[in-house]
Length: 103
Image (cartoon, rainbow, N blue to C red; front, top):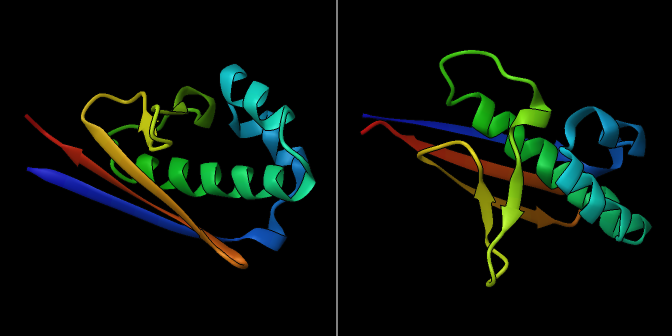
């Protein structure tokens, strides 16, 4: 069995004040190294990804408990067991898909 979640965000609606509400400490460290527009795109992508992951879960969790890091190829990795994610940006939108496989 599997569960799929997806989310799309209009980047211009994202405010930097959202960072401390949804990003883990590790994600905040990365976020703080980015320049203005890239930082907002990063935040929008992470928000969409966390919403998508949230939709695959059986119980509510704090967004800070969902952590997204990146492998050496730049692919996003989710810390939630058995969840794969993909994040994409295009002009004014960020979107993400999460797939959770139940073993």
